Length: 216
Image (cartoon, rainbow, N blue to C red; front, side):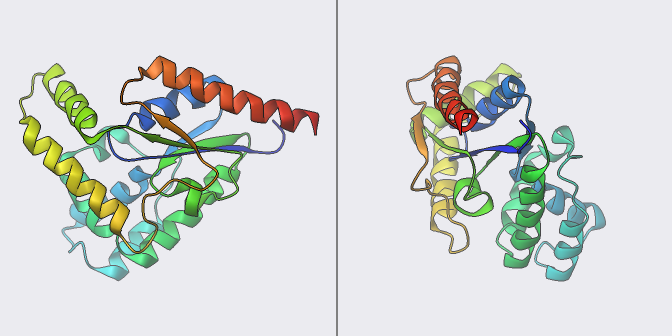
């Protein structure tokens, strides 16, 4: 692929978009970016320095230092970092800085799979393929519970469900870059779909776009 090929994957937490993004990036040999990690990187920097999460100038400085190609998922996946990230993600100037970095990443050959909340609508509105991956809140809560229990943890289903509903409302209700499907996105509801079926459905969509592009 001489011209960078971009795949935008949006959707709420726990719908399976991260797993799907990794599978597609591997299959098509594209770069991969979980855009949520860029916000977590800013939050992690502020936490490490002991700075308030609403310190706009410090958050902007941290955002400028983020390298999307060098994000440590293991460090940034901590729950406290995620909670902090939701606070820095509402700062408009931080969003602008990180969105530009995400766009640069998508434009780097051979292209990329970007997974997040506003990829098809804001970050890459001209993406070659846009997927919106969703699932019911109950299914997503059950998946999260299973995930926690699989590593020996314990959690309460109702609390997880309430947290997911709150997060959905926050993501969909924010003024700046709300979570919503792009008008030309392909909808994949994984409520009753295993990851393999979602992967094959996404591949069919992407292969069709690639075939048309190669003929052009």
